Image 1 (cartoon, rainbow, N blue to C red):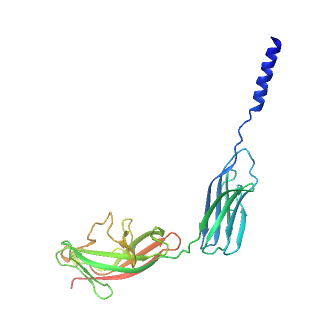
Image 2: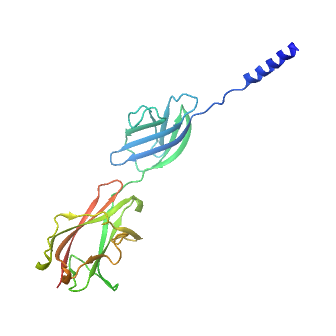
Image 3: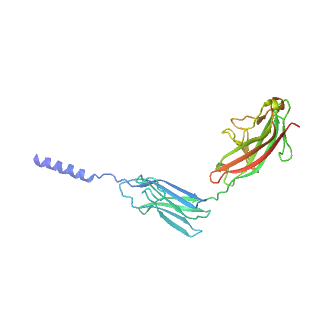
Length: 276
């Protein structure tokens, strides 16, 4: 009986010794690549899923056969050179380098083993441009007539409301998604009303959150933005008649378009308002 017990213990011990704990292999969770064309700076970030092995190196290689380029960058998790937080398994690097507008092959490696391969395209960024601005004078009955403020005034009616409507056409080689906003501001210092109205114009350019143009459509000219939005219904900006203290004179409209990269662009238009 004692021999049988010893035999069972030995068999059980042998089985236990053969069972090993699972080995967790480190891997790459995600890779981020960004190139700042203005400052000519490359930013690389690799988020690592840690395992049992010690991470000795995280390397990103950028290759392009047309240029004969094969350059490798050692990333760090030490809170320096582009890495924001040390020791959080996010390896990063920010490095100055001039890259051409091409497609590159990017390889991310852990401890010398390639874990991820992807393509990265650098598209030339261009600032937007205001191609055209269209103006209309509209009435409540839906009728409308186009006018050019450089050659003719907006006619302010004596007794009925009229409406100023306008559209801006934006050209952007980088597409509609590259545009952040299209807005306008108005300076009314050059406007006046009848003496009995006691109208005192505000100074400077006026700007309000609801003064933005909403994307309407894409045409052969570019991306069309309309002054009418969720806060301003058709037919446009209401213009009071003279009999209700409507104003005449010159208003200065400043149109502003901004994309994701460059400084906003502006175009100023002087619009005369007349009762004649």
